Amino acid sequence: MRWSLRRPASSLHRSNDLWRRALFKRARRCLCGDDMSAASLRRAVCTACKHASRLAAGLLAAIMLLAAIAAPNQAFAHAALVTADPADGAVLGQSPAHFSLTFSEPASPPVLTLVRPDGTAVPLTTFRLNGQTVEIDNSQTLGSGTHVLSWRVISADGHPVGGSVLFFIGAPSAAPAVSEAIDRGLRSAIWIGKVFLYAGLFLGVGGAFAIAWLAKGGRSGQRFAIAAMLCGLVAAPLSLGLQGLDALAAPLTHLAQPVVWQTGLGTSFGWTVLIALVALGLGLLSLVGPRGGAKLFALAGLAGVGAALATSGHASAAEPQWLTRPMVFLHGAGIAFWAGALAPLGLAIRRRPAKAAAFLRRFSQAILPVVAVLAATGIALAVIQVQAPAALLEIAYGRLLLIKLALLFFLFTLAATNRWKLTGPAEAGETEVQRRLVRSIGIEMLIVLAIFGVAAGWRFTPPPRALAIAAVQPASIHIHTPKAMADLSITPGHVGPVAASITIMTGDFGPLDASQVTLVLSKPDSGIEPIRRAATKPGDGTWRVDSLVIPVPGRWTARLDILVSDFEIVKLEAPIDIRP
Image (cartoon, rainbow, N blue to C red; front, side, top):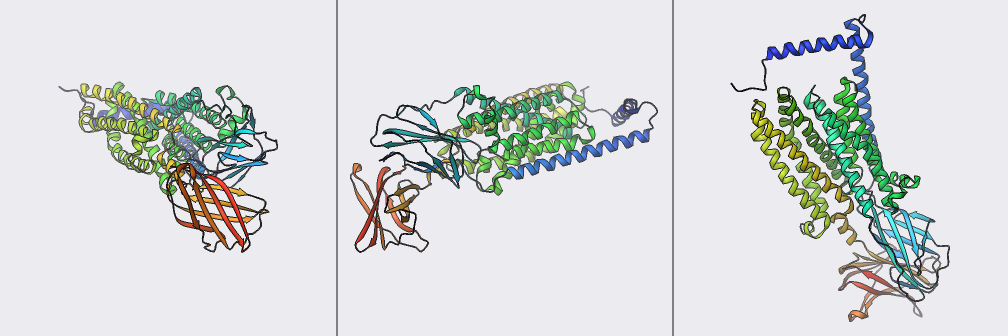
């Protein structure tokens, strides 16, 4: 006779009734002794359950409020430098009194450094944020030679971005040595912290949700989920400190400094950590707290997983925000549902196959819509981030995505086999099939961990979407002379068809009423004759040059011929860099 997971309904009912009576008597003795009546105990239990439910609902509302506060009002991509003053490669006659850096989005500048010709690095601590421009004061007198203005800012997606600008005073000299070495130890620590945080959120909180909602009384996998969440509780604050180190370009030995933690908390990733800690706490409460509130605690924790991921990162910063943030939320919650159920389900089938049939049946019924949501949101986010298929091979972000897609192919294939071939016989009690299913679930978990590792690697690679946005940023320069000054922007700042926008003023920032403005672009080293275009005045206070084509990239010389009157012409000239 074939052994079956199922027992007769009458036997199940009798054993469940005896179990409930024994538990009821034990609870009455533990709470108030033998004198407590059954009705009083029921009222006490119901009151505790109501309090737990209200607490869970309140914490769920708190998570949603934190996510709403953390979501920025405007979405941006990876920050890119649009223009600098002095411009990269500019030759100055005297020491500048200030510097300015204009980015493609508002960015916080935790690290600004000036490197002198002798290699001495001087921190620049006096600066102001004016929209997308960082205005930096320079109180020191700089000598002649080559100087490097090094900057490191935090993008809206919470990731640090750095770069440098070279300028010369008097005449160029040998460029000072600027260390651009990557701190491999710090990067490894950030990657490990991300993996452990993912494990805590997806395997821990997701496991708690599976135990509360799918196992329904079964406790298999509880220790595993608790251990995963404890790892997440350690990894979350540690990742915040590592974020601060990366933002400040500081070594691991500075981890204990308060400014490191303040900097990390000030980025959008700080919100991710705060919401993740709440989600992990809710997951633990669902397992060790009152049983009456376990489901609500677990549900709130699962919502916290999605909210934590939606508050920072490349995908959360992508446009359109009304679409990407909800998709990241659903994607994160779906991953936690699937990945979190694997360990409790596998352990339940292995240890208590008779009680695992209902768990397996509920999971197999619920996983199909979850996988559909995961696939839909994942495909949509990938299309938004990658944009062009060629980026899958040309950019590191795309190559990591290909690796993830390959792992997902094996994962989906394995999951489909489990769902359509092994689940039915395993529910019927076929022992060998149950063993195969447990082994298959173990392999699924290994693939999931590998996917966590790949996803953590995205932390160091800007997506093609962000690179494309940076590529269309204008090339801009500011030219200032005692007689006149001008702001020139060429959009986009790369070769091909472009448009130029010109704003002119007097040398003391007053209005300059010119009768004619001509833009002249020249690049003698490429054998290109000067490109001369007359500007038009559309009526908004600026001058424009449309239908302009720049044929080659590199450093061009831009000259503005400003006709003030029939007898006076002012010429402003400066180099401008055009990207490929």
